[in-house]
Image (tube, rainbow, N blue to C red; front, side, top):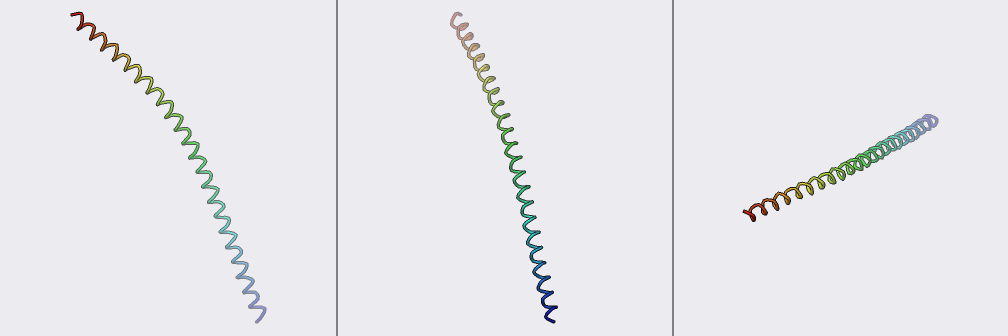
Amino acid sequence: MVLWIGSVLAALAAGGVIGWLLAVSRERVKTAVAETQAAELRRSLADQKMVLEATEGRLGDAFRAMAAEALAANNQGFLTLANA
């Protein structure tokens, strides 16, 4: 009887330890996956930021060129009207 109770307690303890080890292992896997995803998101964000900055620069250049053309056309139109 005592041997049987001891065996049951040992089995329960072993089951608890195994369950705890499995839980810890799963948490480590989840943490590793989350860290990998976070690193991938940081890289993606950095890439998107570079694209945005390059696009922003090109857009600024295009706007300045169009503004210069509009100003030149406006000045020419004003001079044409002034000479008429």
